[in-house]
Length: 220
Image 1: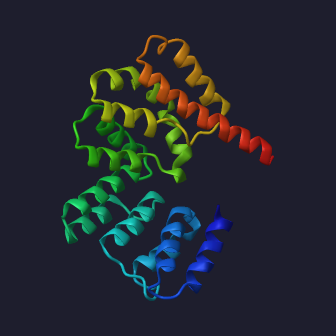
Image 2 (image 1 turned 135 degrees about the vertical axis):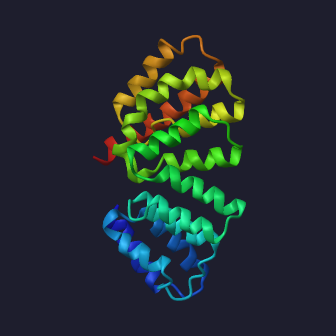
């Protein structure tokens, strides 16, 4: 991942100032950068990449990338929101809060996802902030809670809320036979009589992981 991010950054540095390629490669680099490359993200956020327009979306994208990697804190998120308390900024802020790489922050995000009432937009951002690819080890603690909450989330929530939970909270970052087996076990036991829609969505997530495991095996 670091090698790939390094290559992307090299391309980014060569991109024409203000060009669409510069914008796109900035976003790609921010998604791939490792913890050892947060200084480069900080420099971009500080305006040191010539020609890059740091509009609201770009500032928040970079800010949340740094938060996700533990380089910025909730205080930094709050300070950024104070600069522009628009709805768009509030949504970015919600994502950032859920992306803070601590158990306490994840516990709070999980509480919001499973227990609190939120608009669809804020729920989506919280879900996206909770499930970050850089936080696989941290998120392993929520594999069992995910399965434990499936029936309640499906039975007591609207389809929009329940389906987003099933799909977006599935432990798809923990690519392993163990997760596939736990999914199958749930479908055969607790979920045996679950709604067809729930079983279909869960089965699709499991099948995607089976394909990922097959691809990994082929690469090895």
